[in-house]
Length: 244
Ligand code: BTN
Image 1 (spheres, protein in one colour):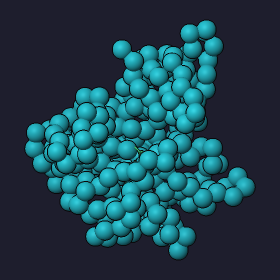
Image 2 (cartoon, rainbow, N blue to C red):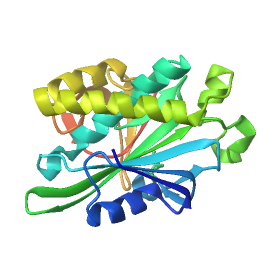
Image 3 (cartoon, rainbow, N blue to C red):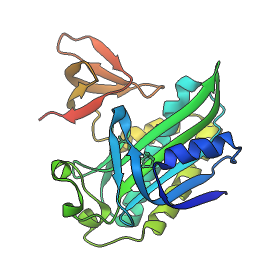
Image 4 (cartoon, helix red, strand yellow):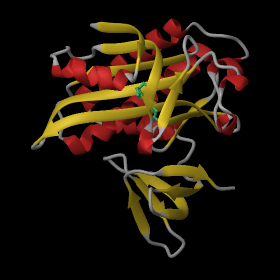
C-alpha cells in the first residue's frame, strides 16, 4: 500500500484529503510524527505531541452511499480497539460513536471526513489519533482526568510503529469482512466492545442534552436512546457521558 510519511503536518486528515484528490490508491495511509492543528469531532482540536502520539489517516473509496459512511468509522473503532487490546494488553472499549476508552478514560479518537456528490462517495478519510507514550503531565491540565495513554495504562512505553502495524492489519481484516459480509458482523463486534450500550447515559449535542438509557445502535450507527417517558430518541451525533 501507499504510505505518505511526514515529519510534521497541520492535520493528517487534511493531507489525506489532498492525496485522495490527487488520486491516492485505496488503503493509502498518511502518517506523521506530529500534528500542529489536529482536528477532533464537534469542532474540537486534537493534540498529537511529537514522538508520543500516533496519528494517521486512511484513504478509502468504499462502495456505499454517504449515509453508510458511519459504518466505516465504527469498523475503524473495532479495529483500533482490538489492536490496542492485543498489542498493549489493556482493556480497550468503545464509547459511542467512536471513542476508545481504557478504564473510562479516552485513549483514542476517530474523525471521518468524506467527499460525496449525489449518492456516491468520492473518497473517505478516516483519521485516527492514539495517545501512546504520553505521561500524565504531557496532557494539558483540563484533560488529565479524562485522557490516558497506552504507556500510562500498560505501565511501559510502546513503539508507535508496532501499534500502527497492528491497527492496519486489524483494519484490513475488518474491512474485508465488511465488504464481503456487510455491516452485521462488524456491528455485532462493535456492540460486544461497547462500554456505553445498555447504560444510563447523557448525550450532549451542540444545542441540546438528553438523559436516557442507551438501548441500541442501528444500521447507520445512530444511537437509540430510551427516554424517561418511554419514547425512543434517535441520535446521529453527540457526546456521551456515562451516568452513575
Ligand atoms: C475526536 O475524538 O474528537 C476525534 C479525534 C481525531 C484525531 C485524529 S488524529 C489523525 C487525524 N487527523 C486529524 O486532524 N484528526 C484525526
